[in-house]
Image (cartoon, rainbow, N blue to C red; front, side, top):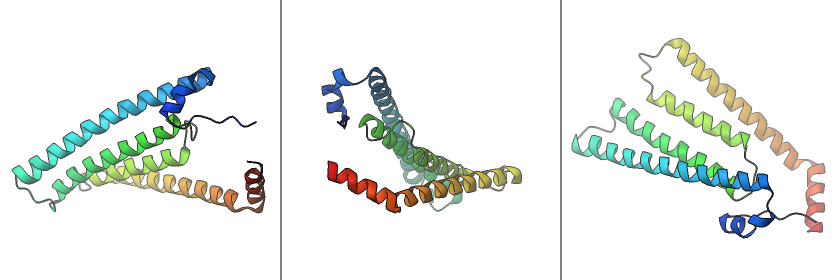
Amino acid sequence: MVKCLPQNVFEIRRDWAVLSAYERFEAFVALVLTLLIAGVILVALWRLSYGVVDTLVLRSLNPLEHGVFQAVFGQVLTVLIALEFNHTLQYVVSRERGIIQAKIVILIGVLALVRKIIVTDLSVEAPEALAAEAALVLALGITYWLMRERDDRLRLSPRARRGAGAQEGSA
């Protein structure tokens, strides 16, 4: 018999008595982290809104000016990175996936590096630092590509399709 895991907070609460101690701990930690990250997102969104209104409306600065663009776009990416991180925690709360999703973590790392590159003043940055950032983005991109290729091969292999068909027939 296949154990059916709870899919949302209400089901977790309903099934609390049958969850193992570790499943309870994992659900609790994921829920607390979700709430904390939601607070960070709200504060970052407030600061972004305030900064955009202050910079673009009150000071009448040109959004196409390089420095203004860097500041605003860097703040937008910060909010997006936090949202993506919070979204990954929802998988844990809903018990759809385990706590570590390597592909998603790699994508969040790429987003963070891209944000850093966008807000960096390239004229004052040391060439070695730029080369290191480029190497990191390349390494993360290759890693993500390799993981995606592996998942695609597993999903499309005849053996995997036969296993999926057998599982569907037994359900």
